[in-house]
Image (cartoon, rainbow, N blue to C red):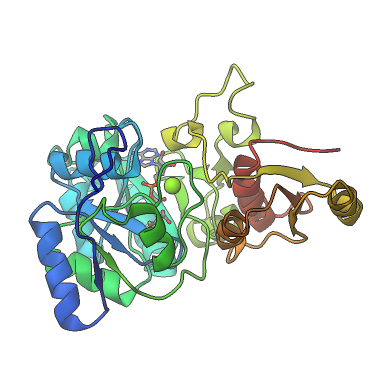
Length: 343
Ligand code: TXA
Ligand code: MG
């Protein structure tokens, strides 16, 4: 029976599961070239791939995820030269614009150091990239993911791939192809059944003009500064709680949405109080899930396991402050918990 999920989408498509053989990747690439949606593996999380130059494909991707369409998408490339198809920064540099020359220098250094890998670069967009892909912004976010099957998928599709995380809006990000199937079966054309994602949290998003990190990830400010020799800042919005801070105007608009939430209520507690709180809730007869040391590689998968086990309440110990990797992980933990912090 077809079920309606709002946003005009009907859950009655046949979602094909593709293996990573040459032939199956080619078939999946044909679906993308024909305007379809195919989920793909990366080193961070699974992405929901669509032709980045096709406004209709972007609309379909939003509908499949069940999310309003004002959030800009990351565009995935398979080789450095693909950048020219999406950004005008190299034209500007060739035209002698000094700022653009410097930005291009940093793009080259960062790509050499971290691509393929979990760094996304925000650059001025070409007119050909539709506003449906960039959420109406004049910039485009670009990254080369570290996954052989996905690099082939992009190349064989003949286009570039927009790819938000391949989960239903609000659910934890998918780090295994089975997570994608459990959220999007019947709503997309296919899933490439690749490896589990060992990175586990989404890529670092860096604005190249201002050298500002808009979303923290596994590539830290220190790593970017070491490669470029430039100071790197965090977007101020990363420090506030979204709903309560009247000055909350994130440069990365995706940061304002409710994210990654498990079904159970989730609390962040100081590490030394964790087990006492677990016992206290268990004594009330509640089924408790807990994470004593949140790790990037397993965090989202743990939340999904807690969902499946039907726990009533989840505790996560806060990681120590003052460490960039901990900051990236806590960014996801705080969002998943809806900023529910126990002192
Ligand atoms: O690891 C990842 O980046 C995963 C995998 C699948 O590659 N992809 C991912 O894509 O997380 P998406 O589209 O969900 O991430 C979009 C993030 C949001 O925070 C969005 O606001 C920001 O990137 N973003 C995209 N384009 C932007 C732009 N032009 N300016 C500022 N932020 C942008
Ligand atoms: Mg997401």
